[in-house]
Image (cartoon, rainbow, N blue to C red; front, top):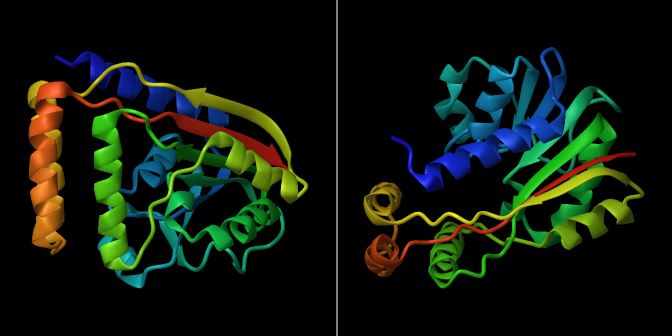
Length: 231
C-alpha cells in the first residue's frame, strides 16, 4: 500500500504534467537526461514527439535504450529553428547550471518553442531537508557541478527580462513527510548511488547520519514551482 507521502508525491507529479497542457502529438524539446530521465519518459508516455537535448556524450550513451531522439548540444545555443517545437521543457534542470547561463538558457528555450515550461524546486525550510540539500550541493561541487535552488520569483524575473509573457504559474507545497522504513529505503538508495559514484568518506558519513535522522524525524520536501510562458 502507498504511504501518504507516496500518494502526495504521485498526485503532485500528475498535476504538474496536467498543468503543462502537453498532449499526444505535440512536439517537445526536453532538456537533459540526468541520472533518471523522468521527464523524457513521461513525455514519451503522454504521446508527445520528444527530442531530448543532452550535453554529456556519456549520458547519451547510457540512455540509448530509451528509444527517443537525443541530440547532443548546449541549452544556451542550439541549432534548432525558431518555433521548431510546440513546447520546450526544463524539468528540474536549470538549478544545475551556472547562474550566468540562466538568462541565455531561458532565451534559447523561448526562441525554439511556442511555449516554454520550467519546473524547479525551491530552497526548503525543513531542517532535515536543509541537510539533504546541503549534501547534494557538496556532491555536485565535488564533481565540478552546481546545485542551486531558487524561488519562483527568481525565474519569473528572468522570463520578464527576456520579454516573455507568463501564461501560467503554480506552486506545490508538500505537507506529507517521508519517514520510517520508506525514508530508510530512500536513503539506502541514495547511499548506494553515492558509493557507486565514488564520493569521499566525509559525504558518505554525513549521508549515513542523515539516514538515521530522516528515518526517525521524517523529512518534508521543498516546494515545486511551475512556469509556462510565451514570447
